[in-house]
Image (cartoon, rainbow, N blue to C red; front, side):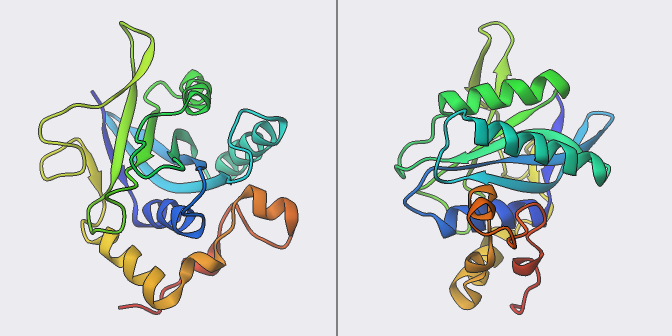
Length: 204
């Protein structure tokens, strides 16, 4: 069973995506590398908040994200989503389809679902799903210790990054500078692949 480490940049981008569209379902892909039994999730590329079903726009966004990942020496290693309802922590059918697409190219792909009731509290608020080979369905990881707690195979590079993310939103409104592929389609100047504008922090 591989272990997964989520970088600060990847976490911030997932958080900002949720914060910008708190009443919408949002999704995106996770980029990274694998060495031995360790998957390093180093970046995230936000896809959609308007059309979160498997549409031509979704396919185009996935293709562009895949090309971008390769250009910076990374690959798609996972998928993330937040649901419209705070209490909904299930992996949506479209999420399963995208995660399967990613897994076809990366065997240890993971899907992360944002816990809407926990995000912003200082906890990671991320629920991992992996493909259960015996049932061929994506199932919530039930490990001990719990994912993203001390000793778990799911880790944050910096345990305090969830609190920093909250601070960046409350003090800087960093999410307003954030853009996904949907935003880019409406304004082509939005750099949805890198989102450099919201990654530099004035908070300390």
